[in-house]
Length: 179
Image (cartoon, rainbow, N blue to C red; front, side, top):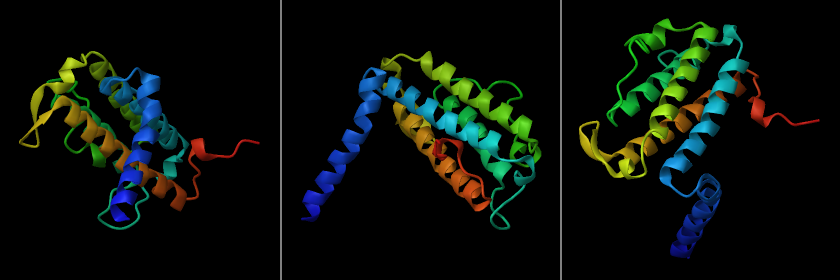
């Protein structure tokens, strides 16, 4: 029974992802760009919806604040694509950006810049580029693996940001009920 359940769960996951592949044209790159558009819209909408006074909120000492999470997402977006041979834009992020970029307008602008940087550079890659070998954290990987890991990272912190928002009484814009 456990093996059957595992197969059913796997099938459900494949079927759930199928619309992304069918809708986007079938390639990993197209599916990635479709999910990037979705996560970007949610992260940016949440950053725009969160009031400036909540940007310094953190759930506990030693845990990233709201603004630190958003800046972390942006910094990681710039960083991950460097593993595919893309240069980080000059002055995009400083090593201490998570601590120093706290103004809502600057955080939102940095997020938008980072997502545009990823989108532009992934769009310029060919489907064949996805199989190119690189290093990710010192280990062999393909560009596809780097992008997959990056997508997981964005979604992990989107979930964190949603939890932060809800804890602060902020409803994510895309989950508000229409009248």
